[in-house]
Image (cartoon, rainbow, N blue to C red; front, side, top):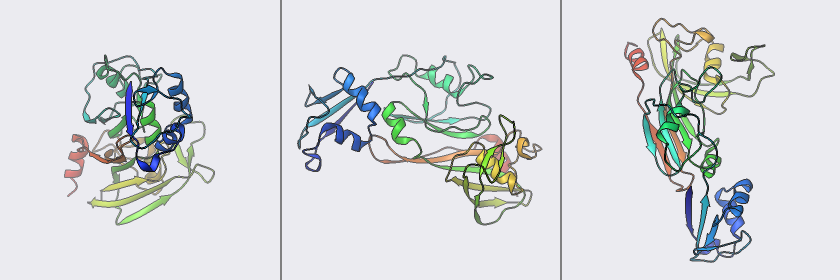
Length: 287
C-alpha cells in the first residue's frame, strides 16, 4: 500500500479533487479504484468524494492498494542500484530473463525480486521496460500502479554496445523492423515494419570492434541488434544476427545509465552501473 499526501497551494485552490489528481497523473482507472477503496481519498484526514473541491492549505491524501501478482520467489542474487517507496532499480546480469516464460520458470529477475519483496507491502512485479535475456544492465521496476503509469515510455536509457568492424563519428539509423517470416524470435528490417530509430556515437575503435553509445527513439524488439546487423556491423557475440562469438559469449550490449523524473517526488534521477566483466574485458582489449 502506498500513501501519498499533497499539500494544496493557491494555484490549485478551487479545483475538484478528481481534476487535481488527474493533473498529477492519476489515471481514470486508478481514480475509480481510489473511490472504491475505504479511505482511498481523504481531505484533511476525512473521507472525501472525488467531486469535492480543495482549498489552499488542505491536505489531500490518496491510498493506493497493492494489487497484482508476484511470481514464485527464488533465492537468486539481486544487485540493487536504487530503491525508494515507488521504484526499484536493478543491475540485471546477462543470461537472466526479466520475466518468466514457458522455457524459464524460477530463474528470472522477477523471481529474484519476488524473493526480495517477501513480507513487504508491494505485491506485483512491474518492469517499466525490458532487456533481452543476454543484455545486461539497469532494469527499472515500479512498486505501484501510479508509478508504473507515470514512468511508462518516459525513461531515457544509455546503452553501450561493442559492434564488429569500425564505425566513426555519430549517426542515426532509421529503418522499420518487423518479425522475420515465421520466426518467433528473429526480427529484420522491412519497409512494412514498425518505425524504428536508433542514434549512436562512436566512443572507441580498434578496427576489429567499435564501442558505441546508443540511444533509442523507439523500443522495438531487438532494435539495436537488428539495426547494426543491417548496416553490416552486428554486435560482438550476437550469433543470431551474424556477430562473432570469438571474444564474448553473448551479445555485447549493456544498459549502463538511465534518467527519469520521479513519479511522485518530481525530481530528476540519474542512475548508472558498471560494465560487467565480459564487456569490460572486451573493451579493455580494444587497443
